Length: 161
Image 1 (cartoon, rainbow, N blue to C red):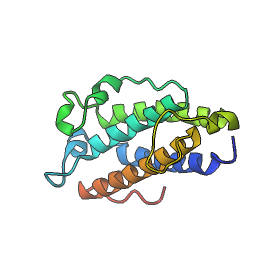
Image 2: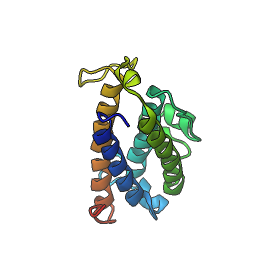
Image 3: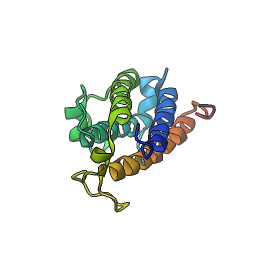
Image 4: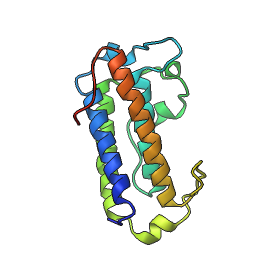
């Protein structure tokens, strides 16, 4: 693994551990509950995290396909998803994408990291490495939301990962 990727890969693996803890054994009704009317549910934020992980895979030139890609593509709000995957289905998809991401991060070389990503990110580094960095931050932000929502629906803390 390129040494520049190592801390980012570690962050993504930590995020994955927390997502697994949050979704593991989570009931469908609990996952869909909105603790406050104008706040997304844990399920919807998890959908976004799964979809963002697929997006990163696409930037890395890896297989980003998953069973829910068409459903997620049109969703801007919870109400936009007619058939929300269960927490178990989300976790299964997340684990598949995570394995692909680990494999790709282990094998990506310096030349590929330095190439333009084809995307523009707020951090100002539009290289593939910049994309990994920004999307690791982005995912961490949403994993924090998942942790807060996990507590808000009565499931307790995700600490101790």
